[in-house]
Image (cartoon, rainbow, N blue to C red; front, side, top):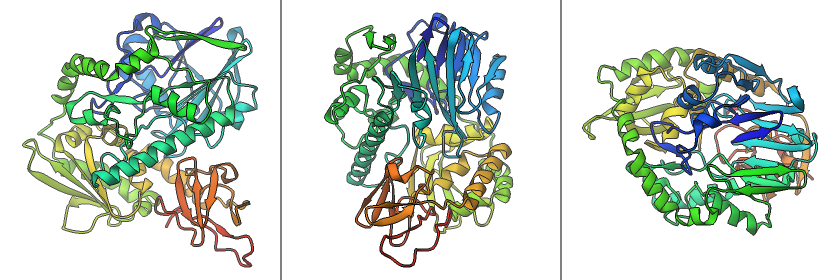
Length: 516
Ligand code: FES
């Protein structure tokens, strides 16, 4: 997204090259735009470090190094460090949730989200005002609410994510019918969340952005939403429009690469490089053509993954064991061994390695019960060790080039740990959970006959707005987590107990625990 005003231009999250082991490509294809010209901007804003937002190659090759980077206030300096390495030297560190006035009357505000589950240690949204026109580029950030933006005045353009951007449920080793059912639930939840955000802000115009990606490798082709699968979590912008219409939404505007929307206080006019409906009617052909064009890029990437000289067990030991030793909250949260089955170059031999969280070691699998099992190509792990990747979510897991099985509920600590394979990140995540464990969230609210704590045990959404009680079950609509109210137990993920009792009960249930 490029925002042009008379007081300057801001390029936001320019993503062009494939991300995550060449799995994700931008959809629709934007690689044929005139990036030499588009990259000549006054400001650059990158919302977070996920590789479908932070495209290092593209930033290096096409974005003017005279641009001032509008930097979210993240807990670590990783984004600034990476941008400096790419040649950027001008930074404006935007104080969190404070309006900054730039020369010429352009105003911006950045909200940084900093929980270990927000992006790769942080995600953010950008608010912009010029000449009375206000825009919120919420992108794929998930603030608990949008009050901080709404308080700055009526918003004219709201840009937000509506589609999926995760590996669940596709990679899980489940019967197809279960996958479809879970996928459908997830798809519905994504839309519900989007409607809630839209309703929060009540902007004049809503622009569905930040997804879905497309998958051009033959091995991943089935993830594209072109097969009429109601469990596909990657609905596109045209599906957004039709679903939005079902809930009464009439102000959605879909942009294609090269589209231009002129937004004023009184309306929006849009021009497109081709008719939008015609484009989506030919989506499959677009993807097939793109697949042929991008094939050499995928093949070249694949050829770079194998590093037979890497001893994977030894490499994982060296990287992971020191962090296991330091980890209190994440290790306790995972609470059991996690197994990696690594398939060799021949496609058949398998090396099984266990990351033993209670035992604090990495070792060969010993025929034991494990909490999670991942199965992937050994070459991918070799590559991660070779490049010293500190974030296996922002590489392996988002690639969807693995399958998974687990016993019991989703465990967010597994993924939080594997995105923190550096001292700096691990310390931050441990500190964050420590603070949350200590935080006494004393305020209660009443919902449909139940007194419950006001803030969701997951990421503190305000349950007076996001909570729905149906019988004995509470659902927080921000991420769809469910809780059994009589026991307080979280039904979606281990830990995260909620404090609740019936309105007429004399003795409240004991206070919730952050971790079990
Ligand atoms: S904040 Fe995530 S489900 Fe409530």
